[in-house]
Image (tube, rainbow, N blue to C red):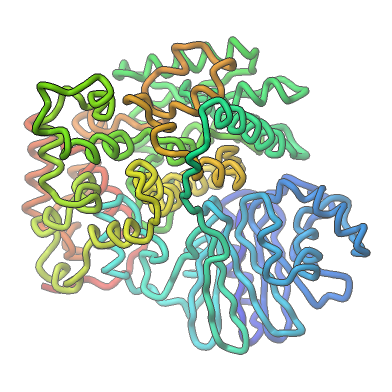
Length: 624
């Protein structure tokens, strides 16, 4: 399903139709809306389960409860069977949406705890005149809302809200301040003042004109000291297999992303073992000779051959980026400079299947990124730094994989506590943004600190385990705001539904019980996950370093993308908003293009920001 939209307040079908039509670009599927004196609901469907009788909105028997939702409920057959034994009557053949109205009748607001799936839900209770909005546990599906002129507007996409005449188009400059550090707008903010995003596991209840928001689920890291490797690996394998099995439920053919890395390869292996049909797999490859990318291609082909998949490859060129840059920008509605390669591989997937499983979420559960690899060495280094010449083998293991880089560890420790060190790894630190942002922008954002956002998350994390604290930070920020954002936006742009088995709530909760030493052991990332899937994959796949579908923009910005870069980031075009210092931007471009420094990620960040601003003009300009 592609998206939901609607509002509470006086019924206005014309406005709702405009909101619904704003999602049409996602695919030529049926649109619909429903109105009562207090509520209007609309959606655009990518029908995967029960496409004949699962149209939305869906009602209970007397029409007093209505639901629209975006996503899939994987355990809906089991929920439906239980509800039928309790006397609930269903009108559809096997619609997962209809399960929601009856589950709400049975359990009230707590019905969400019974769901295994990915979802953004809007439920209207006519008797209580109550609207409930809810987002799934991991934040796989987006949900935005805005209060305007006595109404509560909500939608899966910002563009749907912007189609409503009451929605303000004023930029939220404090939210934009954080974009330049994180490469995305952190929730619950959006790029527009007044438009908010539900955080993962959050719900909003709008009743009698009052709005209440709370967290109905959160991931709590609480390590089990009695857990051993064999038990943990066996349970991970059991949960992952069942998660893959559930996510293969569909009324249409399905496939899988295959990067050649551990995560996607494990999913493909389990799909091949569990399914009764040949799995279709999809990889992104490159026309140019790019370091590490040939290894991705070779490993993906190796896994495809091992499991006899019907393998497809999308050959990407720098010109493809130039030609599709505006479409990628449009998919987000906000400035975003994270991974965008999903757009291109999904264009291939869309020609073959409507559903694709992915390996997303494994990094944030089991440890892979730089901040994860650094967590344990930085924690132990202060107590070991003065005796490096006499460390035991066990003590050296605590510093791996940075046991030979004490100066690097010292340089990071100088930043301060874990939040400050984490902030030092962002694209632009708070200090760095002082030379990037204009004086007026800095004045508007006085007191704002991206480091403080990270510190707030660390302060709320109860576990003392250094790696799990780093994972908790990413689970609250990077995963929902960037990784799942680009997966959802760029796949939905091609009407493809992506299902990530690693983000089954049972697997997430179990992983949170494991100590960090199981996840990264003596420098080996995802140690316990590798043990859980060891029999599925050859050693070179198990042990290869993390790569993924990451575009090689650094080199392209010096070559094929250079004309676009220079034409977009001119002083004249930067003056459209006045947020950035043109002299700083010019210096970054010159140093990068001439090869004197690598500013690729920062320039990509600025390029995508400028493109977004111009696509959403007219926006107010900051005047110096």
